Length: 220
Length: 310
Image (cartoon, rainbow over all chains, first blue to last red; front, side, top):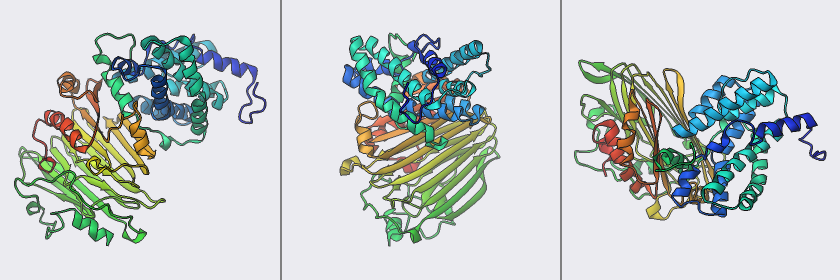
């Protein structure tokens, strides 16, 4: 696959391993989290596919998408894992966002450790993924793209259920965000820890207000 | 001339004869500092005119009151002290009148065990147009000893077109200390129709409680800030944002009463039993003050420091 791409030299085994790790069937429980999207939908701020795409674009480019990609890349490239874990949790602007990254990271680390007989410590989700990418010698560029697309696809799925939208509309949103996932993945590869950061205050606020909603489908 | 122009534009402070006798150099009783007084946007300062400022303050409990235990000021960084109460109130002043490319400011304050220090700023800080390769740097380090209390309540930072700011707020506190910290940013003056299409902003907050990183914020906003702010999922056209941190034993019990004070454009979460984080976006700096004032009054249990009054 992708033999013409200079950055990708993936063996079939590595490709299959990555797809296994980022498959919705891999038991991290991503489906339970909306990252605050549920608040935005209930408030009427995200009511159609275009608004969903805009919301996800903001979350990817200016919010946790970019920060997660950078933490993942740093962990995979051998930066101090304890420091990254502490930072990854501390960056959460709300208790539910902290739970989201903590619980998915814990489940991911536990499953990878058990299946591949590794010792990945419980860590925030992107840090756990980065440690696994390093331990399994998986190609980081492809891991970053798939991580970001899984992030987008999971939240698009949440949007499809919440707004609601048709499955086809949801998949169109995921497809439209693919170039952004690729762009951010490439930037994260060459970024430094100090490039961490963004600006998405209303997404943070939506997650902080999520536990105030009268009825909720999601844990964040 | 730019330096002088900036100092003169500060209003009231330039006329102060000496900052050494800090007791007598304060806004008069009842005087208000408009948060947004009209003034010229200073052009970029040349390299020769870079401003430097360092201020260091220690606060110690003495006979039930907090007193100064250490004080150092140099360059354009000044600290003023209104008449003392039980808490020590310190008013920071950048006498160069703003921050532009190449400027560097450092503020360090520590509240020793049991001390209560309240810090604010004389006026809203202004971040003026910088030369393309230059950035203004502001570094603040706050330390809270056992049982100490520190209220970090600077007035807002107003960013102008072409501004470049690299700022870091590092807080180290004991687990039984009590911190309230607020950082507010205003993106151009709404009433003046200012829109920022060329901004370089990095703003970092690190809060350590008993040595453990409990909260970190990494704000990074570059280039067309107005375009980013206009995005419905980011700020929906708002022109001002603030983050408030409250860390103290039992802080989470304040979550629900504080939530009742918030507009819909604000959120508040208890990250742990000891830590509250609030974010708010508002249409402009004036509205932001209205949103913040009741929250900060509640958290500090006191009126806002006098320079804040509108």
